[in-house]
Length: 217
Image 1 (cartoon, one colour):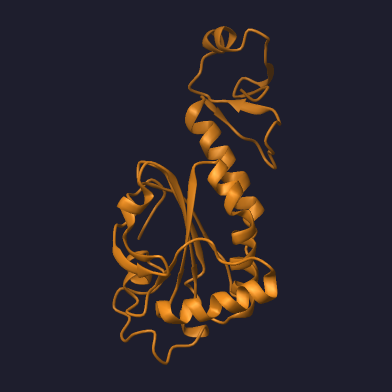
Image 2: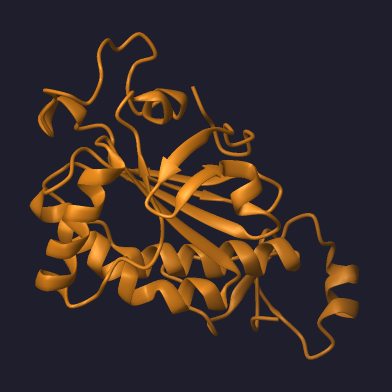
């Protein structure tokens, strides 16, 4: 099973933008890989359109976006027309075709011994292919979220988590519940009070010895 901080499995695949080798495609950037159980499904249609709308926001954060659906790339191209028509945004990032289920199995979204191909499978049989992975420039998995088919994913939340992870990777802080960019942050327990006083000369608030709040660096 994949866990946080595992190396994201590398793979080669066909996409709507041509063939890729995943780690090479990520390069030195962050990446969001989000998957779909089948083309021409209603909830996924809304998600793909909204991510297209947010593409520039991900780019501002040095983050690439790539989708995956358990269908051939040719089907993705046809689906993209419906997405643009109904959501008002054209898909502006690559979509991976996974007709042999290779990537879905590699990322534990389907059992490794799952037989067959995408042919004849329904969205229900692929229901677990509804996961968001955030992968860092070090190619390690930073986040995994799996949603039911009936619930649209919140990509504003994905952006918020990305902001948090990039902030905490740079500074010795953590973000508290419901944090939004600009809110106070938590000083990491690994930072002593003496070090915190030097690091934050304007001061910080000690609520408990293990809970110290400071303005976002």
